[in-house]
Image (tube, rainbow, N blue to C red; front, side, top):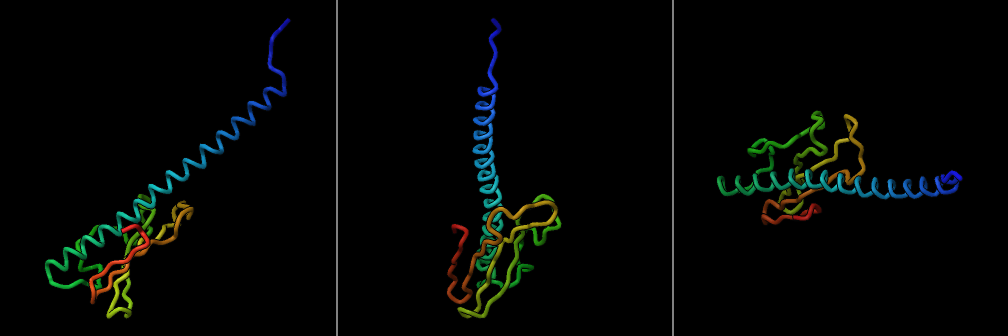
Length: 134
């Protein structure tokens, strides 16, 4: 008598493999997204460090990213970055500078995670607030 698998046994194995593959893919996308979030936090960290260095050198913060010696992507033209950084100024708090890291969605990059992280610097008080964990 030949020993072989029944169709039901093969279907059960295929279903189990499908479930395991789905769980693995879900965990993989979470890990990838954490890596991309780390890129956004690194951009904000560079902008923050540059602001602190600027203040030590000139005695005050700047509201122009061009005054800072940073090398962060400022647009989505590069295929190497998933976030790009920049500044905008608000008049609240005697002038606030918002550093941001926005999600790139061009060049085949999907917006699976947060679309933007911000870091607020109150120019008068020198206080920092952030949604990026700083």
